[in-house]
Length: 313
Image: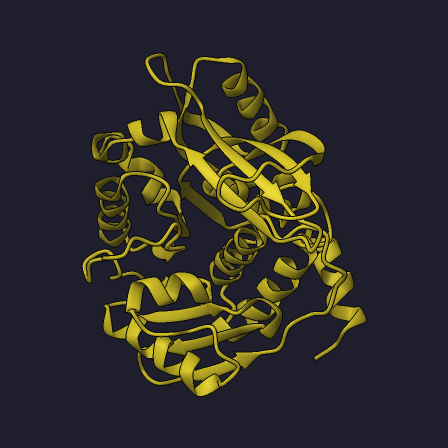
């Protein structure tokens, strides 16, 4: 395994339009915002940035519109050292955008207009098989069409790449075929949607049952993101580990899950055990909550190291 593993991200890229407000508006209600900002986002792009900031070589496959948002996003990704040769311009679709409201507690509500992201096709993937030959880990999410994600899973299997799937946004019916990956890593609400079982419970036995159901869906391992309760690792051969959380002052939870999943993928690519990788991922996810915005909050390897040294476990 090389010192700088290659992570191939097949995923979404958006421009985030972010408003801070004291509270989330109720249906039909207008609330006054306390600030507005644009920031690079999209689950795939967030994860690519997080992986790159931790020293991985990162290659991105996706689509953007030929518009001002697209130009700015490509420039931002290149500035992070991400290989954008396969971030394809799409003249007949706008760049994806996400409308994000962040309340006083740092919780968020998001609506995504996918735009060019939904023009990423299975053929886009199959025509770039060489990217999979070079990758240590393929990192996937569900902001692209599901047949495209499945195509990436198949190519990864063909080329013996490990696959980490962040099943978000979670569909109400995720096929067992889609779940046949090395690691599936939902948060508790996504796991509940996928399995139909209540996951957001302080009783760890419930989390174990949910993780077991994810394994039953076809995943070889499940890493459940539990926010302030840390994470839970379960493998198909029955190994289980509960990973403690790191404590931070929460400013904005946007993309904390992306920081976690990207860190998990980098750890796996570097040959760490799943519990070891999840411990680092917990630190990365916590740090992402301490800054405003998605990609701006993705931590560096040095920041993660400092937090882990300050809060040894």
